Amino acid sequence: MGRPDATLEVPPISGPDRSAGGHGTADGSTATAVSDAELTALALAADPDAPLPPDAVPFRGDDDPGDRLLPEWYMPGTVRAGRRTPARTVAAVAVVTGLVLINVLGLCITYGTLTAG
Image (cartoon, rainbow, N blue to C red; front, side, top):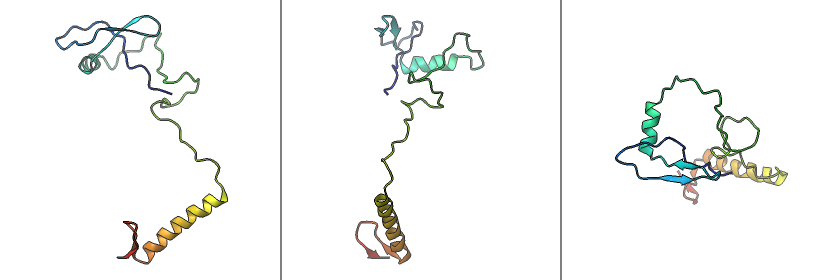
């Protein structure tokens, strides 16, 4: 569950601030590293209404077949703390009840010391 490779394969772009050359990829091809300025220029020059090519592949961060709105590397699923036991429930209710009671009585426990007002 890592972030996908940030290398973008694009045709070479000439410019005064070109600082990176080609880098090898896992499949042996060469990818051209693109600076933020070049990527911004490409994005602003692109036609937003252009149709997708017929061989376009949707981006998926993970290789699982699930069709999620956000990839797992961007927004992972929630982590559960385990089973909810009666002891945990009683402890949580006791803490919340204690804090509500302190507020009802007009006391303050902001800095860990119980004080009036």
